[in-house]
Length: 461
Image (cartoon, rainbow, N blue to C red; front, side, top):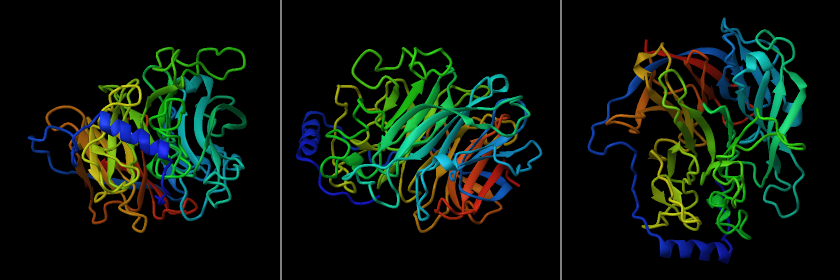
């Protein structure tokens, strides 16, 4: 991340007061689970490439309609269909490139980022996407006048006309914008969209970009607390809305009354907060699942973390990075102590797992495997890391149990027959209707690359 200038004195004073009031010993390098337990060894899998030569594929999901189709989200704005015979259809299901920002050819975190189908998609044809829309910005904004310019994060509903199960092309004119928020920088967009077991729609937003949640800058880009600890902004949070109850006149959705800040100070849509870049989240909602909401939150310079998200939880950014304390003025030197509570006295929740940047620089959240095809993964959470660094776009895959004596202990996944761990940077991990997993990679960090590959996970050969 870019080095930012010194912060406002008010931000410095705020952090100092918190540090003096509430101290916590550093949890150096913990990785979850019982420290006395011996973690199991690596897990081996195989990968079968199904689609190649794509722009970066960032997500894959299904419509829950029994069609066997898998929908591939490409950062450049298209959703492509891989049908039940593993044929990539030529025409995109949806193309929103004309609504989006112009992506920077070097590196960019904007674009088409997320997709979720309504649980009754087969009958109502509704689905939801997250993308980045252009905005002009204003003089003085850090994104103003740069190649990675100012933008707005958008959550929209689209529909398919006719029979949703057999129609492979959505109606691009059906867009109904549900939610927008202006982003001060090009990165930390979050991007996940997912329906929960409760029927509500969840989506994630990063802290707005830059380093240290704006606390290392002048004039304090994200306010004196940073966006992660500020419940009056939706940035740095996971939001939850109801898209099925008929909303009041002039509104696009209803806020679930059990959201933590309904009727009190705070953004009503917030479900959980204190996050830096919650790029991928998923529910363990397969057969035999726990319904846990798991989120990979991308760290800054030292740690990557996995969180077990609960209603109203504050996950500590930018006071904490992983299990470590965090100082935005000196981000590579974790202080010995930091607050244990947030601005309103709420506890700061630890991640369930973290790891250092010797393994990778951006956690990619995945799924708990509940499918029938790869017994070695049964009941385990499969996730990974984007790449070891920007100059070496080769990702890694990990796995951990979510219960039992070895819960939350990170283990490596070995791709057989090897030797390379993955055929490029890890962009995402997808899941089909049967619960089988897919690994999405790109051979280059440019969003304009056409080295993207979608591979199915199989048992090790």
